[in-house]
Amino acid sequence: MKYIKLFEWFLKTRSPEEIIQWNKPMNNPLKGGRFKDIKINDKRLTGRDRDGVKMMSRELYEFPNDPELLNDVKYAKNISNKDLTTLLEFGISHMPNRTVDLGNYNVLLIPETGSNIVFKLMETLFDVIPGYGQGGNKKEWRPQIYQNAFKKRKWKDVEWNMDLINRTSEATRNDVLKLIEKLKTKKGEEYAKLSDNVIPRYRKFIKTFMDIRPAVEADLSGKNVMILDDFVTDGTTRKQMRNLVLPYKPRSILNLALFYIRGQKQESDSDL
Figure 1 (tube, rainbow, N blue to C red):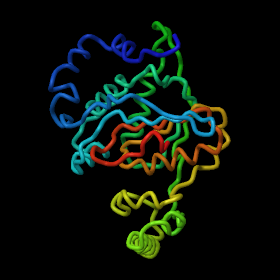
Figure 2 (figure 1 turned 180 degrees about the vertical axis):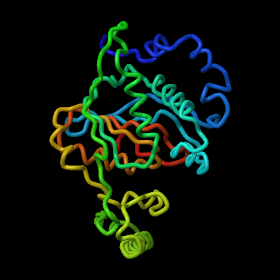
Figure 3 (figure 1 turned 90 degrees about the vertical axis):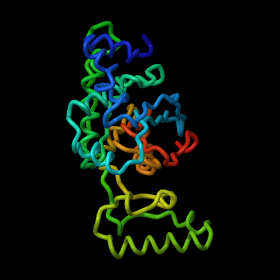
């Protein structure tokens, strides 16, 4: 079977009781309770080739721009482990499986993070992928896993795209230069964190704010690489991680995240 029918397999491996539970507002993560404003991402999964590398990006859900709920979910506050697992399984099972074969990704990269979601996403993938689409026969999925694959730089070491900055209006250029000076002097020894520090429209001026660990580099050539993340806002971090992998000539790259924050401007397919 060329394409894995993930949703069909998922239904076959879940008991009728579990499937019925998903259709109840109390238990279906998208039909009530704390997750009622979260929407499944039903957009067509697309991508493009760059330098011979096939690249795709996917978030399982659209997430409301709700800081309190975001904080609850990201750090598993006031949300049970069972509810989070159900949300992950439900999202993975609704991926457009005819476009991507998750089981073919043999390198799994996880950035430095304090978020519980990234690790839960990895655990759920391992629960879902082995055996699917194989008529009940087990197919072990054993990717090489690199935790802390990307390391953030300190603000004093962040590289800014001065060519791009100098091509903007004088007002914008002055604002960005003030921001750079502020970050270097007041937060220079802190590791770069975009949220609460750099508004989305200025993030395009950041050239490099993280590095890929040397131990990862040698294992990327010719591989199908999956990069996991939790929340995507404007796609700056996602794009940075992908661009750090590209020079090592993988066969393909899939950026897989759980949530896209609704209302944020994302990069388009042409930006991949």
